[in-house]
Amino acid sequence: MKTLLYFADFRSDTVTRPSEGMRKAMFSAPVGDDVLGDDPTVLRLEAMTAELFGKEAAVFCPSGTMTNQIAINVHTKPGDELICSPLAHIYNYEGGGVAFNSGVQVRVTGDAYGRVTPAGIAELIQSPTNVHSAPTRLVVMENTSNKGGGTCLGLPLLTAVGAVAREHHLAYHLDGARLWNALQKDNESTESYGKLFDTLSVCLSKGLGCPVGSLVVGDSAFGQEARRIRKRFGGGMRQSGLLAAAGIYALENNRQHLQEDHDKIQEMDHWLSSFSWVAERKPVETNIVIFALGENHNAQQFQSFMTEQGIGVAAMDSRWLRLVTHRDIQQAQMDVLHKALHAYHLSFGAL
Image: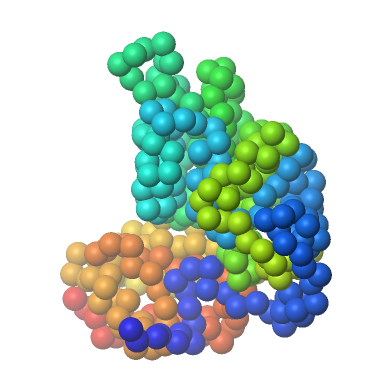
């Protein structure tokens, strides 16, 4: 398999490399055995994250997919049902894990930007006393909405949906893979989210620039069961303090730089708005721009053209593409993209 080395990689914010400061923190981290519960650096990261959200426990895992799947498994039992957006990561991008890992089915509601309404949630809730239906046990929200274009849902909407969940005695989980970006954009606090949700998944390997890792947070009873499920899913790591040290460094040093990513994506969105071959753009709020090409253009062709220029972009289907900014995108990468967009326009803009 050919390895592509991009000069400017806009495919995802997961492609970041650890900074020199992060590497030094990882190299010098004291470690133990996390499965046995005595890795001091993991314990510190978990305590920091739990405190940020005002929760009793946090569990460090290899990925956001695992933290979401753990939360779903703890909150449900086989034959139950959860409600989420049709764009949700747990519904589209976690390998059918909801069904495979937990035996749970999904009902969806919401718009093309990842937003739902309290009424839309309430309409889908099925009674546990109706033997003909799968009982609804869980509502999952995703903030920001990846497939929605980095949409920020905001605390008012999330609070209103949470009230519906509470009224019907449903668990409430947040897929916060890019929650740090939403907090930056909306000037919201981690504590407010901790009060609102029963459990939250937060990622370190996207906007914060870590090589690996997510955490799931909740109360102490949830934390204990989450560790059991993490072990069952094969997510127990040993001297994972080396990875946890990157997370500590990121929380202490990298959150304040997220606005730079947001500013860059606004500039890119402005560029795209000037090209006639861009038929549609989803609203840009954080570090993602999703756009559709006109009918005579093909996303795979566009992707191949960019690859030849040393630029990585993500084709979502035959028309829609995604560009994401992150810590490794500096002015040089922006300049290369700008030049390549104009080159594409000169080659194919008249189609």
